[in-house]
Image (cartoon, rainbow, N blue to C red; front, side, top):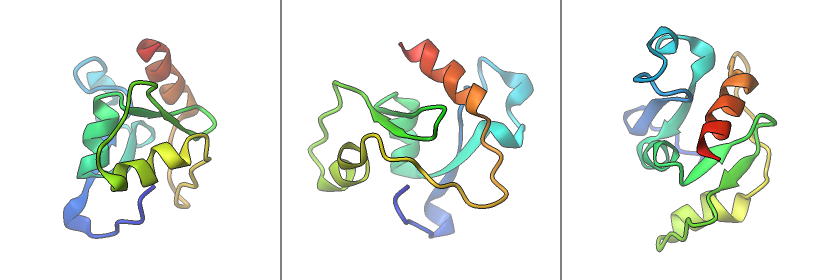
Length: 101
């Protein structure tokens, strides 16, 4: 999503929260790799990824930092390409986004 490839800056972000879905905490289809800043923004529902893997920004998200504007707001609706081998489950994204609505 951002092109950051430094391992020390990357986190596994859970799509469906561990606290609500402990059975999926280690499920490979319930995680995406994000840098730590975008992980926090994802967890705070400042942006989401829809079941077609498109970036969706919260209507109230108005970041002051250009990096967040460039990587989230200006890419609204853009479809993400996951690395080969990624197993992101569209139904997990759909469930999360339904809960955010």
